[in-house]
Image: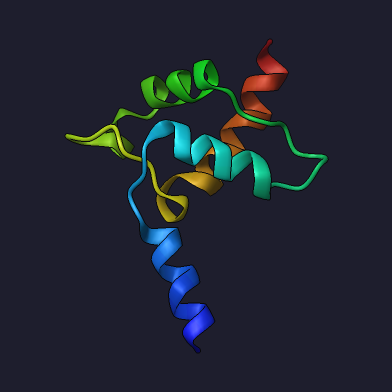
Length: 77
């Protein structure tokens, strides 16, 4: 149970863009598109309601949405 609690705390933690980027790229499957600072900035611009009054990121709030958006974004370029 302690491991689940620690994992939940990490998922809920609000972190900087660079911390989120590092964690995201380390934990996604190899077949998924990786993120970069410019891509995360574009995601922020496309989803301003996810960043109300903050520039902080969290795995729980942003990871899944970013993964979905990245597939659409990659197809558009």
